[in-house]
Length: 532
Image (cartoon, rainbow, N blue to C red):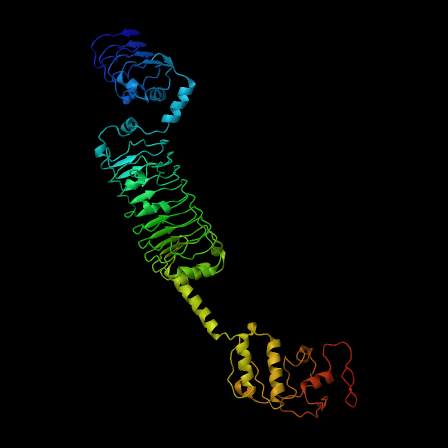
């Protein structure tokens, strides 16, 4: 059987046609048919005539979607034909349709149908997804990855009175105004959509428009809005988010932290991959219960204004532009930070970065995803304890000059001086000045000499690095300096030279000449001949 005409009867229900496996044309005109069930098994059907029946709901058309070869459909004279959406709705859902109600389907109509209904959520789609119509018993609904552009008021408290978890990730939503009065909803996931604003603009002339979307979700505890097109957080001031505990806003275009005054219960705030270059003073003041803050990949150059956060335990600031080690001091007021991430910052590539962070944050347990062991913390404490002792023993150059000068006037015990901080020229200048003022009887304190030696008068022939050349001290091997030894007479002895009557180290050096010079020393009139 290929053709079957059952018109002008009183048929109200279509059934028992599954055996007609070769049926191509079916006519049920002028009957009392209200539903299109019972036709889904006619896989060979090409033409269906149902004019002048009682089909009233658009969703009945979805029962014809399993018919892969249906190209001609006539529903003229049914109540459903008088609905504004009927023709475009039918063309959109019945993709192979060529003729509808005696009129050919044009290309422009197909394009208009796609623009109108592509991505639009329908009640029938939800039923197909759930497998039933008992929406009031649904507590969790997953509609992720369905290219939904518009929820079309299909997800509302009127149908989903007990819905607590709604997943709309990876869709094409531009706003959430279609979510109405979901008073029990606690978790809403909207990651990877195209949402630009949290509150839709009200039309002109309607200042008292009823709240929609997020404005009606008073029980919300978890809100995920990652990877959308949100530019501002200011509208959080007008949202009922007093009970919100988790807020994800990563991957947006946020450049300023604002509008967080009502988020006093938030425990986790994720703001990675935005454009937040600095944190304004007081912008985080209301987040008194915050446990975890993520600001990675934002371009931050400073760690200022991240306090006070009295309960913050995890702070993730990796992949920013923090370069100065002094910025770590700004995190010291955080009383209970356990986990800190600063990797991929210029700061993290500097020497002693890890040790400095551990020393400045005594509560820290994990740094850059690496646990801080007890042994590591002990090594850091020893390192900084040694550094502190070295700092305490260090005397700046000016203080060393004062100690040295005062030692010339009396007996002063030797004082350790960090020689790398004081040049010989400075010490030499200080000694020369003191000697000029004190006269020939002034005592000289030499660094490194014992107290008794330092307090005694300086011998005339004693060599000192500030008044004699290095050539007078470093002599070639096997040569005698001709310098009087301690306890021996200045005259007498084989080969000894009489002391100069000038009485001073410089005169003796001038008389003797440099031991490293290749030229003979200049003879002094009336004195002994210089050695060859």
